[in-house]
Image (cartoon, rainbow, N blue to C red):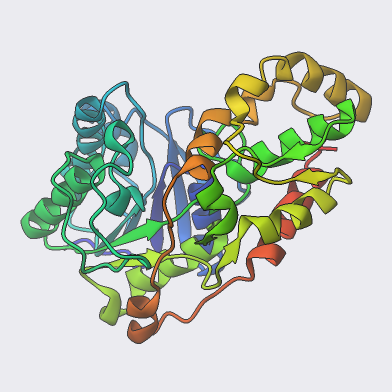
Length: 357
């Protein structure tokens, strides 16, 4: 067996979770490789790897000399149907494992999924939820097809075939730093608040009454990365699935005014029905160009920053959504974050990067 216990490969290195994992792997002292289709890696010190996850030949060429001990898989592709999501996202993970497995270097593969494990896929979101909140890792899978389940099955099959350990990490909505990401609530809300400030409008909560009044939680990207690194290196975490959330809970009616205060805008809460962002942001592109020019920002294309549809989905859920963290605590992972502090930190990082005013 060829083993290099100081090498890590981050698949999906440009995303919110991938960037946090790159930093965590470097902090662990590992030689860290970041795989993306473009080969770009926004974290200094990471060795870039360019490959197409759907092209086994491309992966073979790119990964032959990497030979990592630890693999962190955070990449995913959104398609028009869940069946397509299953086919594509199963293939990406399977292709990586089929290339790395025979090299006999991999000791552990950590897969990031999310709470759609409990809530159902985009096609049937929230329609067949059986689990009581807070969600526990012991819940049975839903009957609805789900690409998270398909990815888990690929992971289990690869572990059995090639003999590596595994872990699965089920995150809630992730708060972190990235650009051009399809699931970036904090940057989306920051852009929305900045537009409200520019236009002199109220910062209107776009979601449901349930989300406004009910308890929920979030996942800080750096905390997710800490748990994934812990699971890769602690025997008690091997071959297990873990929820990962900050460890506190909140109501948006309490947090929304705090978020508004970061941007000096007047908050307005839920009032009789949801007011989703996507139909209200039809003029956001032009407004953002003016804001970017006025404040000398580095990105004037609002579509690279805001994902209205995904934030609408998160805040529009008509169900309580929060996670139990006892399993990983019992296994030894005691990390946590204050959600208000984590949000404030992320907003400041976007400001420092001149992405928002």
